[in-house]
Image 1 (cartoon, one colour):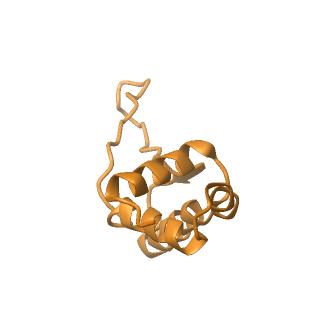
Image 2 (cartoon, helix red, strand yellow):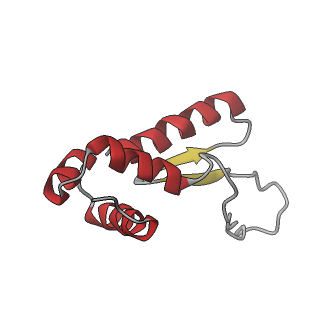
Image 3 (cartoon, helix red, strand yellow):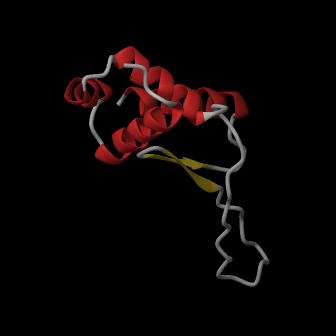
Amino acid sequence: MKLTKADRTRHVEAWRQSGKAVSRYSEEQGLSQSSLRYWIKKSAGPAVGFARVRRRPSSGSGAGVQDSGLRLRVGRAEVDVSPGFDELTLQRMVRVLVGEAVER
């Protein structure tokens, strides 16, 4: 039976909420792992996009206060990014984390 786009979207959302591995969810739902992975990838859109960033107000007057960087969350992972970070390394790390989020 061919699934509709709405059915596929519901499966992707149910998998995300379940916290289960793709293999386990697929088996329980009678889906092929490759199909579910494909739907997950397609539903994610671009691997890298814009995100809302909230900056914490500094506790000092601003004089002598150094920028403390930011915390990046990808799936369940958190990465502290310090000032002067290597952009290429961060890009590679995000790609790995995004891939792991799909594979979990």
